[in-house]
Image (cartoon, rainbow, N blue to C red):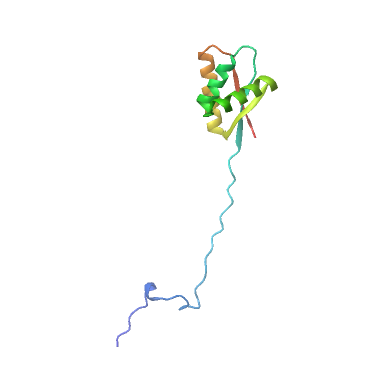
Length: 113
């Protein structure tokens, strides 16, 4: 009977006592930092405009937007969301641009959480 080479597909578990387990260590990846987006109170921007901004740019329903608007009004500022840097930066720019186009001094800022 002629000899034939043993193929890897021919092996069954436990056939080779020389088999070694190769493990790779993966470095732990850190989560990217998050940023709080905040609205600041002013004496000129109408409350309904703030509610509209919260609904339009932050996807809040009317009652959620109204509650946050009242927090901004009473406390001077409120966090309206926490996002990655790029998303936070975009939201701040959208709110500021929208407010300027409607001639309101509403301020929107972001800071690292």
